[in-house]
Amino acid sequence: MSIKDKAYKILKKLKNIYKNPKTELNYSTPFELLVATILSAQCTDKRVNTVTIELFKKYKNVYDFAKANQKDIEKEIKSCGFFHNKAKSIIETSKRIVDFYNGQVPDEMEELLTLRGVARKTANIILSSCFDKAQGIAVDTHVKRLSKRFCFTKSENPDLIEKDLMNIFDRKDWNSINYLLVNYGRYVCKAINPRCDFCELHEYCCHFKEKNKKELKHIFGIEKKIDNKIFITIKFAQSLDGKIATKSYESKWISNEKCLEFAHKLRSENDAILVGINTVIHDDPILNVRFFQKNKKSPIRIILDGNLKIPKNSKIVKTSKIIKTLIFCNVNILKKNEIGTLKKINELKKNKIKIIGIKTCKKNNALDLNEVLNYLYKKLRIKTLLVEGGGEIITNFYKKFLFDKIFVIINPIFIGNDGISAIKNLNIDKIEIAKGKKLKLIGVKNFDDNFIFELSK
Ligand code: SF4
Image: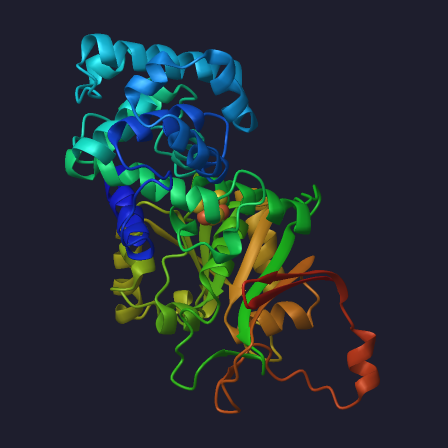
């Protein structure tokens, strides 16, 4: 998504939240807004509004302020902070407006900038609120913070931030953008403890993504790479009643967006991702990495496909020229030299897919996982492997205790007995046997309303 597309998605959401964005400073003339804006530097609008009630009663217009005694003004505005400088600015600004602008606040940026205490931020507020002129975007502390959190800018300098914003937003939106960001910064995206849990904009927020990444690291720790074998992580998402898909094999979006990000983070940390052929047939995944892939190659994709059933039009095949892909199949079907199989092998090879024939287990005719792992470790130097499913594959890895870590993502929904189970038949008839294989619970994390259980042997 381009920065402009992102900016306009944010703008649309903010416009839905704040129907009539405007300054919260109270004023009845451009001059009063000018005074209030000078007072609002490093001070809350609420405090300024309290102070200006009395101030504007005593000093009715620009002429009164131009004649005022500085000490008297200082007393009136003391609670706004920096009262000495602010009083001086208000009086000098008033004198200049009387002397040079006939008692009227000017409506041009260059002229406003000649007034003491008026920089681009104040000038933009006056121009947009009083004269409906869009000559820039007022950058205050909220606009600055949010612009950085949304990655609209990298700068700390308000003038440069303003330029970045003016490049992103169309002129017709310059006047509203300040008030929308200020409101959001004041009530939701606060400087300290932003209310990210309630935020409707986190999908566009760089700060949130960064924070989330750190949080995940903190909760789950960084995977330890073991030198003499492959570090195997199993990950699957299931319903509360242990189903990874409905009876029609629908499994997409079983977990929420945050868990999806977590899953992609896991992928990015592994050398290879392994799935069985049923996952390719029913889910048609790409098995790539989103969100966390910076200057890094995609993990190698490993498909266990005993009978070479992989569809030619699957996304795996379509993307195999750009993402390295290996298929392990039953060595016997390669030996048979059947025309149909040879044709398929040729097509897969044309798509740069490597096919490796291996033995199957006598007991269940499944591909020998130890042979697969040996190949990955010895021939491809794979050190970390993420096993993503489906149920048969997960169960086979679990039964052989071929894993170092398991992440189970649980969405508190029920799919029912006719759904597809995450763990298949284990032939356990006694609780004691199950307890003997009990996993260690390392951590549980609540991601919105989904839970991630981290387990080890
Ligand atoms: S996710 Fe948090 S930091 Fe990001 S915009 Fe929302 S409230 Fe602000």
